[in-house]
Image 1: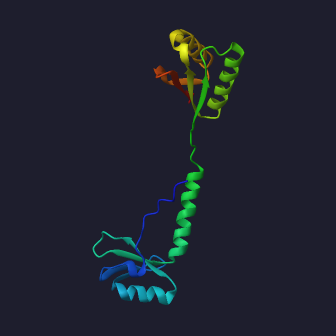
Image 2: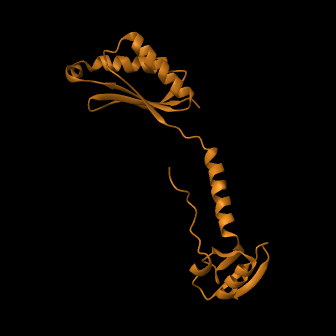
Image 3: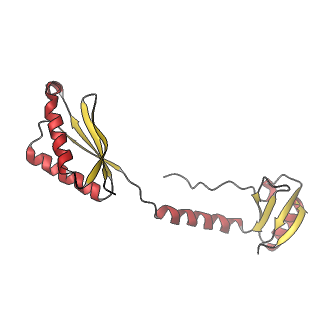
Length: 173
């Protein structure tokens, strides 16, 4: 899992400019102060000085509880990530001489993946002398396409990739 992408703000002694524009803990404008004076005021109130606009002239800093701010940011990011729907690419593999019943089972599995909202890569694997009879694989993949007509759309049409014939089917939107 990737780490949260919170922009790194400078706080307290990390702020190296001589003067900063300061905003108070309640959002009120305090004015332009020496950095050391802003840090002293924040420490007296039990807060931190956090640089919020480093490119402004002078840089804008806010007096706030930095630990609480970071906690709220991570909570907000977590909530936004919860509502994202991630799609996976599932893969179904079979051989050109796969029996009719087994092929129907694989197609049923693909339908299930598509109903869950996942893309599915369908692969027909050729081994050894099966490469001489590629039409069996093409017939099998055409049968799969025919059976999935109402359930999904072809994202990439069937094509040979080395010894494999593959295509990607996406769920119907």
